[in-house]
Image (cartoon, rainbow, N blue to C red; front, side):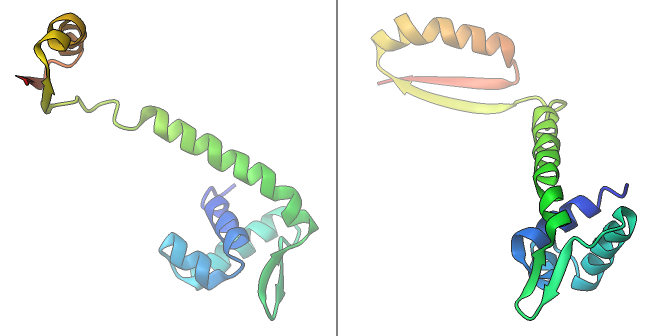
Length: 127
């Protein structure tokens, strides 16, 4: 299976036209049409009905849609779970707080935070 067909199928299903779907994905309607046609050929069924008002899902397209949405959600969840794991947090955080809160509440939390994120500089301003 060509995984490029999943976003193509979903974009067309959501937008109802190749042109709008292509704009959403940042491609051309001709490329998107080829991807949808290739998916239809691979599955041996027509997924979209072409009409004067655009494209609409056929019965097979409607059956595929929930699984395609589920696959998209699973991929996005996976991407979000690993995105940025190799990057370390760094920079400066400025915190303004009254002395009592700083001493009794914030100090223990900031100590743990500093141990977890040594590249982050914490600037504490007592107000």
